[in-house]
Structures are given as structure tokens and as C-alpha cells.
Image (cartoon, rainbow, N blue to C red; front, side, top):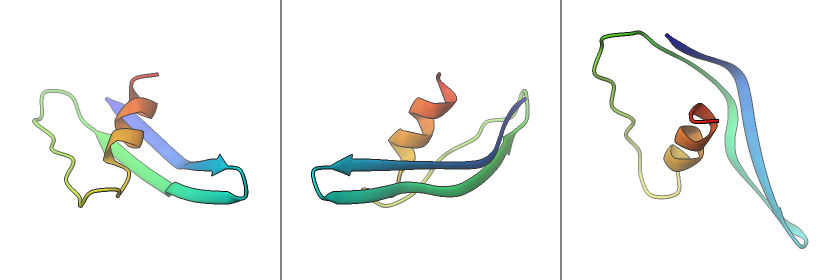
Length: 53
């Protein structure tokens, strides 16, 4: 099982900050097919990168 609790990620570039994930909680159970859906720029790749760490 993969479990994330209260995960946030902010990117800071010079004077601009972008909140990619804000207090995310997710639980992905074993042996289930799980899809992560969302519009462009919603944080899907950021979430996958954090899961892969």
C-alpha cells in the first residue's frame, strides 16, 4: 500500500511561488488499478515524483 498524509509541495522561482500540492492525503491499495486524473498543471507529475522517491 502507498499512503501519503498531509503532503504539500511548493516551487519557488525568483519572486514567484507556485503551490503544486496542498495538504494531499491519498491511499493506494495493493492489487488495484489506480488512475490519477486532472487538468494540465494540476500536480499529477509532482505527485508521481513524490510517490517515486
